[in-house]
Image (tube, rainbow over all chains, first blue to last red; front, side):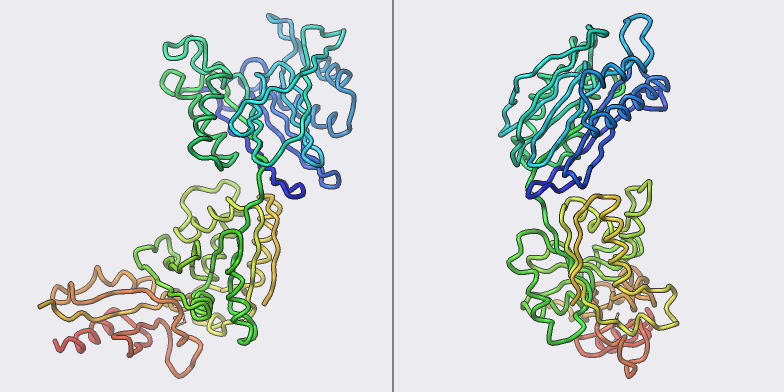
Length: 394
Length: 87
Ligand code: FES
């Protein structure tokens, strides 16, 4: 995810592997060129499936990313790609198709498509069809490239997929001719009507899941990939943790949860107590909301989540750093992770008063000081989850 | 007439949680039969006692809004509840 000026661009690709194969024959890659406020995403589909196809697809995405980021001419770039890839014996065309979304500063978008199903650009629920310029190389006249350009506005979504989506169900009774672009479009329009703010992640997952339902036994008769790019206003979250170093700052500290356009979280019982006292709000700890070895969750009016501090933050950081995170984080950490993942801009408001009791040698675990955990969280959220994170100490 | 209930607040702050409150929070399941329905078990954030040497050591449990039990165990809490109920 990246933040380009005031629009936040969320990019997600959901993929499922063809039933019976062990690798995905579609490849998706996205890079951000920070100094240029530019982001390039490529989805490529090799012909067929399995390891060979997977290699072709990943060669294609790497080449495309390189050429596009260096602003090379399109036709010569496409020629290099097609000359490099082997040619399919039967179909006499080279082994890959692709869609590139090149998002430049000010939300200017350039889409280049080569034989993937045509992309969808949704604006206010409508399928905007931009004029496309078709070009091709003299050496490969069968391979047409379609180019389109437009300026995105907040709320826009760009959706593109491999033919595993459009051809879902092909030849089977429910959707004899496949789901097609039209079927997918109607499905997406319906979802957006119900859930106008659905994230790119949820939408791409829903599309892929729906494509599978068209196939017999919900299987994947081909690799299925769907990329969703969502231009939206950034979602903010503010997380208060730790009592302020000086007591006379309690009031200012507590007031940071007021007049804030976003979600707020408090991690720390003492912290919650301070906010509750200063704002005259009751903190309730519900013992039913415990689980997974972390202290239970509490509730306070106007606050989206109230948890214990150090243990919960430490576990949250541990989970976020795991490469293959299972869905089994303890309740408080799971809730916190969900909120953080759904946000784009995260502000930590960290009180720095140290709780001496945490240094007690009889404690069965070593408790880290809050500042260090917050710094680690910042690093992982920025580097792995592409969030914009700030820390303010009190 | 409904019988009197004793309020038991278990501190689930970081220190207490690590030193035994994680077990104590399950106490409702371990109450002897004569006490079932007579105890109202709640959680509470750090009571502040863990930072004060005068209180003894964690975990802390508060009973009847007034009395804080240090080094709390299931047994100690049950005895204290019995005392409140004159059992
Ligand atoms: S954590 Fe229980 S009294 Fe501080």
